[in-house]
Image 1 (cartoon, rainbow, N blue to C red):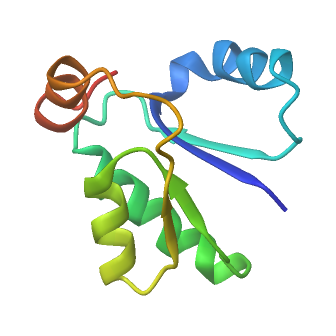
Image 2 (cartoon, rainbow, N blue to C red; image 1 turned 90 degrees about the vertical axis):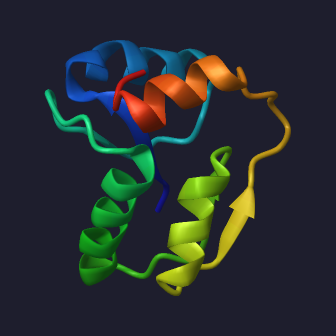
Amino acid sequence: MVVYLTGRPDWLRTQTQQWLDEHNLPQGRLLMRPDGDRRPAAVIKLNHLRALRKELPVDLIVDDDKAVLDVARRAGFMVQLADWMPRDGDVLTEAQEREGRT
């Protein structure tokens, strides 16, 4: 089973699902940042991962955010850096980590 875990707020659910569908990605569960939650992506994603692990085995976490991978690795998850797409550098990091938005 594939689970997509994004730092995008839930009010972007329809657009996010459309993007996944348009790019022919496998069907899967979509977990998103609760609306109004401005905690860093690493905090939100780790909370989702811990809850998910209670429901089913989590074999691998793939993310482009090294901070997310660091906390996931320390929590006992196997991780893989998604380095095939360049990050937007300081602008994205500022929005996600310091301001809690995307």
